[in-house]
Length: 438
Image 1: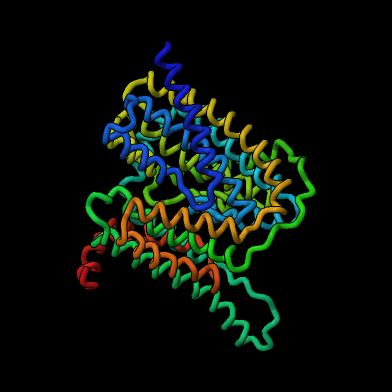
Image 2: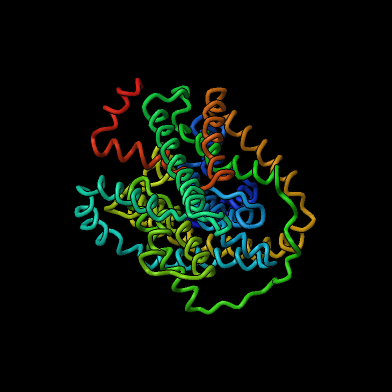
């Protein structure tokens, strides 16, 4: 019993650490987890492998929840929350940033509760589902890519004088999205076929690419055009339980799909689920995206602990299996308990932090914050991946700036994973790589 309580204590400590990491724009929990694993493997972190596992579980929960704050108040999203930024930014400009943050947090709580209730059934459900979809994974991913690109919509007004100019403006936006997806896909193919990173940095192969594609472009946008948000006048909100439940379950469905399907991210899963359930309205959308992000990260981690499943999905699960493979119902029950307790603690920290940030945000200098966060992201990339990683980051930033300043959804940058992996599943990735001289 004492040993089990100690593990729960490590999870709670991890929640606080992960929450602090989540408050830093552009800093991902995987970066800190990778550092912790390096320290552990070198003997500089003297804890047991189980203690490290639960520390990382808590860090994941804390980061998921508290990272909503910079996504809303500082417009610094990661790849899983980039879809929700537009509605959340709209709330911020209306003085309702606190409401947007808490809606995301409530969606995460619904998702966490749903996951924990479904956890004992995952073994019985996932085995037949995996058997059915595994032979069809390749074309399902291609269908996801097609839907993502076809659902892009030209965001132009009627100010152009002629139909031809309106058509050109519309396709300028759509073309930017297609260009972003194509370039990021080619970028990913190069990294997965002939990565310039040293072999000892292989576990961080995509870190510089993701920093360049998703982190630095947004921070650069803030650095060039950022200004303090308007006074946040609304510090309470009135949301119907039915809205929280519908949005939360929609996002949970999307997150589960993303957890089971390789390559598909939380943002894409939430987008698919929103269309499938005809989700309308900014509140429902924000709630569902918070739920989808939570389900994606926690669901993929929980699958590793389910006895009989042992499915490795997501970066944290892959990193954990390098040092420890959980087994048995005891660890599963402890994992479920730790996630539940950490989620409640993290939401409380989110509430307090959001109230404080909504009061201070008008006094924050966004450009200075963006500059500092950019330096942190660049330094982290350099430490983990060296000069070669910084070069990869620079290429990724060049691609990531296209949707920021030209047009198209930032989600198209996920072509860095979607395109090369789908080509490999179709059996043509190696052929294309040879044609390109890779």
